[in-house]
Length: 91
Image 1 (spheres, rainbow, N blue to C red):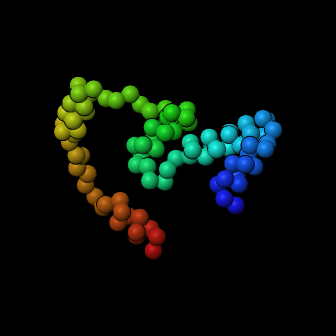
Image 2: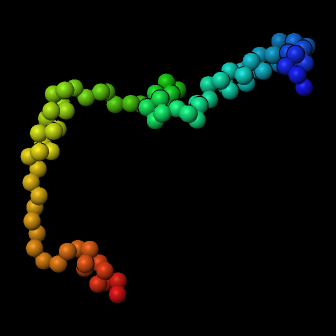
Image 3: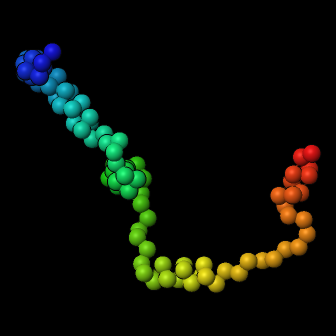
């Protein structure tokens, strides 16, 4: 069926049926492209109301988080490593 035949068939429909076809075409156009980046997809879902995105962090918040990360000190624990204990128990 050619595009012109489809258009003629749609023109022959009742106004209610044409509205239904219009809704179907509109919903197809709103489908996300499989070539979207992750950020674009998140924006698409947020625009649809499916998800909410957190507010962007300020420079102050980023600096504070970086300082907390750099101030982290690893705790040294003696004894057998936990991974070794698990392996031994499974034998």
